[in-house]
Image 1: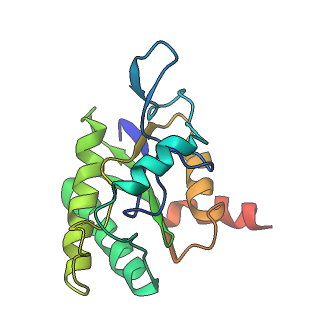
Image 2: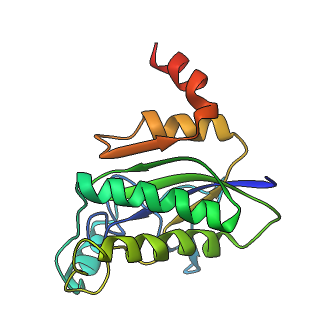
Length: 183
C-alpha cells in the first residue's frame, strides 16, 4: 500500500465541535481565516464552549450512540468495504460514540473519499438491523483523516488505547506487536 490513514468519525451529537476533549471541526484563526485542523501535523481544537453551545442548539435530533450489536455489524462491514475496494484494513475500533480505522490504500486517493466510502457502507449495514435515527443520520458530517507516518503506533492507538471499546478488530499481522504491548 502506498498511503496509510487514520480515519475517525463520531456518532451524531455525541462529540460536538467546541468539546473540551478535543475535536476536529471548522474554526476561525485569530485573523478570521476559517480552517479545519484535520491533517497530520495540525493541532486538534478544544474547549470552545460558545461553539459547542451553538452546535447543540442547532442539532436536528437526539445524540446517536452505538451498542455491541452495532459494533459487530460495523467491524464486519469495514472489513468488507476494504476488501471490495482493494484497501488494507489494518485495525478498527468502535466505541459508543465514535469509530477509528487504520487503512492502507494504493496510490494517493483523496482521503475524504476513503472515509466517506466507509461511512456510507456503515450506514447501509446499520440500517439493515436498526432504523435510521429521526435526524436522518447516524454520523456527524465529515470526520478526521490523518496521513500516517507510523502505522504501528496507530494500530496500538486504535486497538489498545480506546476507552471502553464495544468492538476491536486488527489484521493478524499485528498480533505479535499487540501481545507485546499487552505485557
